[in-house]
Image: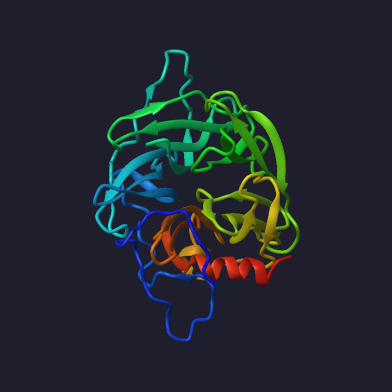
Length: 326
């Protein structure tokens, strides 16, 4: 298979070859975690975080829960995508207008390069969890726009291009707490402010994704459809278990599912995924792609405590989705 992808060349993508004897579609970085819980000066944990190529290296927005257990997001830089320097204090957003309400908390960011700048979405506290939106051009100054959903909503992810002339987003309507349900929906906007034309995409469907699901990294445009890495949750006798899966969405009508993997790609198994503030969590938030080789580097949170890396290729993940579809 030779899947065509819309992605630039990224020769310095973090990469480690598949281990000898491993036949998994996705394999873990041997030096996980790449960001420890105390990577920021004031952090209690550093977890579900977003990374993009920037300049000669990489930039990121990291969820850092501080030692009062307040959730916020910090900027970070890296030359190689593996060794990170994270700002000790949270990002100070400048409101786009005086009427923009600040977020009481911020967590689980994603970054979407779009229209020549970097848009950041996060779960924002505004009378309950909703989707916050901001942008930066240089990862030094940040602007906060209006919240783009009402409470309650989580896992907001923008598409990296306009679809039929409009901006597009996936999100997961929610409730006030640790939701015992959750479907993925698609929404459109002419201006990143007014959102509508909501469409159902997909729901939990049993097994590892039987309780709730949520979009992960920014969808990757391929000749087979939008490649969506997402998380699915199983409710076990010991609580939630978060795993990573994949689906393909139609390129021009992304609420239509082309194919969806029945099996998970990665589930909690290593100590750093099973032991932490929230046990048994693999939570993907970012994915780098090298357009020349199809290599993928997927950043995910482990046990709500650390940031980890896993690797694959576009061909392998698309094959997985098509061959093991539900």
